[in-house]
Length: 125
Ligand SMILES: CC(C)(COP(=O)(O)OP(=O)(O)OC[C@H]1O[C@@H](n2cnc3c(N)ncnc32)[C@H](O)[C@@H]1OP(=O)(O)O)[C@@H](O)C(=O)NCCC(=O)NCCS
Image 1: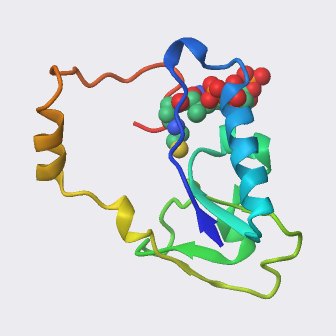
Image 2: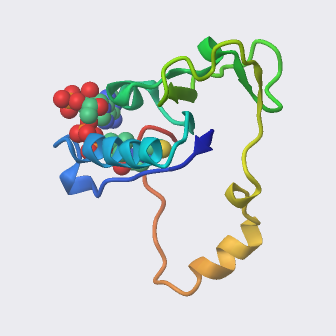
């Protein structure tokens, strides 16, 4: 079982198939490495093109989500068909995904200031 991401395509190259090619390539590598399934936090509108579906359909819940909360961002794909048959469980985001906001601010200060924008094609706010 594997998680990865996020992935990002530079704005001027979006909607030309690069995101799908990049993700398909990563999934091929993951399958070649022997992983049986991938869990991903993403938007179904894009990830479904590479074979992802809602993780809940595979019996996997996202950690700490209250009952009835929107879990449509939490996606899954089997790399080995049937790999998750008979399996249920709760996914915990790996520690490496958590950052300290203060550390981020300090890191960002090394670069010219940037304005936060909401760009077309951004799948999350
Ligand atoms: C999400 C992202 C990686 C997609 O990359 P991309 O190269 O633009 O995607 P593709 O051209 O391979 O798109 C394949 C299909 O996915 C769907 N899709 C892609 N972006 C979409 C969007 N913003 N809204 C709805 N559907 C989308 C479309 O059906 C598209 O096919 P089409 O263009 O023929 O309609 C890119 O938009 C991006 O970098 N977004 C900002 C960062 C982000 O939100 N990353 C995802 C979080 S993990």
